[in-house]
Amino acid sequence: MDQLASFRLAQEFQVGEDLYIFRLGCNCDGSALAVATSEHALCVLDPATLRPIRKLEGHTDVVEDLGFFQSEPSCLASCSHDGSARVWDLRAAEAARCFAVSSNEVYSCSVGRSDSALACAASEKVHLFDVGQGKRMRVYKDSHTDVVNHVRFHPVDSTQLYSGAEDNLVVVLNTDETREDDAMVGCIPNDECVRSFTFVGPDRNTLCCSSTTEDVRIWGLGTEDFGSLRAQFLGLRNHPLLMRGGGGDDDEGSGGYVVETFYDQPSGEVFLLAGAGQAGDLVLFRVTMGEALPAAVFAPPAPGSGLRGHEGIVRSALCLPGGRVLTAGEDGRICAWQEGGAASEQSRFGLEPTVYRAQRGGTAARASPY
Image (cartoon, rainbow, N blue to C red):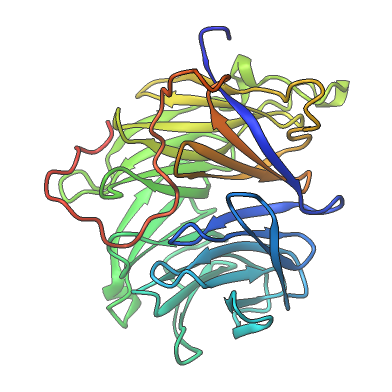
């Protein structure tokens, strides 16, 4: 443990005492942070200070997911267990658009096609809406045979829509095509249920898939390596650094879980943020082909600092410019971490900010991770 790098807790903010935070999101210019909560609302904060700016209310059940527009920093979308999705303008108090998606819970949403379309996952279907007209464009009902947990437009080619489901598949659809059969671009068999995924790499040409059993598989998305397994991290729950609980006998053996994956620009490597048991402990791993190597710990707050850190499962994390990492979860708390146990400690990582625009310039891009 002494040889590992560390992230120190710099700030925290308690959004609520009796709520879960399911998702963090930051807008394209870094001026606003939004959180999706179990109390049927979204909270908008200043990412630099964690001070609340406004509360967005309108959903009538748990808000599961959110996503900012890529070119308009004041707009974001959200989806809820109330069966709806909403588009918000941060300058207004009410939703600009409300979409009746399904009679079932909506688990995931994403904005794409140059901010003109909203995709939503409900049961085994993926719904696509025209944001400007407020109308449903089409429903992809045959791509999956089980519940779709996660949808995301590709951040570079925003016409391509990715969906991951309980049927173990990641499906890629070309939303320019009107017929579902013609829209199918490719399919990746993940071997296990897909809970979520993240695009990483200089051109987002690598996909990190997290399963419901807390395993991670990393797939190539390029023309030459689409669907090829580049790396994997299996058995996360049993890693010695993560076999820690909240102190009770019932929590012993609950093991670790995946929070998020990040891309490190200087090394071209993928890093995995994982949590331990119910206690809110966090460890950053460097992912290789056959194993995950501990790289950094998120140190508990110093006594007398007035900070508490996390005291429950961490559900979401994102990177901000300057090496800051934000985390949030089932304790209703947002924590801001800074690399380095002391101000004089040299930075070891170049974790790429989670905020990025659709277009990425330059022809001399770094090769894909792995």
